[in-house]
Length: 494
Image (spheres, rainbow, N blue to C red):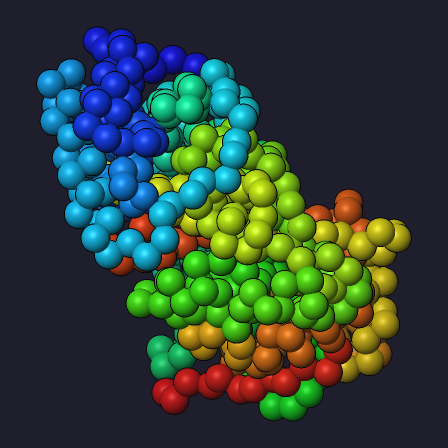
């Protein structure tokens, strides 16, 4: 792993300057993050390239504890004198914050590390010519539009690289080189009279991988299938509202996990400390170790080590080594997502490594790890899952969704909706959404396919806080079945 973007700097010397400067003016703890964030976005529609964007940011942030309170300051000018100035500014900020601090900040202990970590990639996406990327996207569009009745297709490819250098006053010196990639498309079919349409988006998940993911996933083949399914969906009947069994494929289960479990088990939300942007959580600390969140077969973990995960790293932005931990065990809620500061709030002695900042200029905060539903322990295929359904719907792909401020009540749509009658898929539906309360929904889960059917899904753009930060996160699952779920018709007026 190379750090060409700081080839003119001695990172260790710069970090030592920050640590010494803050301690000299009263800080009891300090860390510095020097980082470059590079993003490339390529977008096309039909036979045209709409945009090619390649941008990067570079700078450093210094975080301190002084007089028992946090202080933070950042700059784009990476130079010794500027590091000293920003170090002093961070301490000044901490001293100002201490006036309002009710209890001193206490960090859970963590080992120190002097190491490097990098995403295991085969092909650096930034080494691949833009011409090759645009041709891939245009070929996706061409293939999707071969399906008779399709009229529009747009596609995009997003690649990201985070290069981070972290050093703390406790002795850690950690370098990381993190990659993520996201190819996607959407194809639209139009009715003959032009008064109705249906779309089908790609089921390809964003991944913590290199460009090889674009070569391994059958994007062009899926585009043709997606075009044909958009046309079929346009002709499909609307769902009749009522209660049925539900089978969710991993391409949508990830979103349900994200909204109804991932955000609900963030400790800052549970304590009401994160309410402005997207609400709090009903999963308050009095439920820890007691709440029957789901059926006994429901096991959910937080995992920052999963290969290919968007939130997979070697270390979080507190310098805590990435780990795996239980959130729901045999249906019972047993663990929150925490940072070093948060761990003591619920009596934990260690952090779960969930600290992340999306930019050097933003303060690290608690962000979601990869939160995944573990597959079933006994062999079970999707066909066997379907065979035990008399009247149901199988859903693929994410669609629109809504969830209340406490993460109790939700509604989800999808991309593809398949009718299940007497153990067989018999056709397609449209205008489908399902509704439930979080605990009722997860307690209605009666079967999860085995590990060979496990897949990752995820979001590149999970928003939180004010000012907003965006974090990438994956959620894995195998196909799962839920009994007696409420379905509604979402038909548009045309």
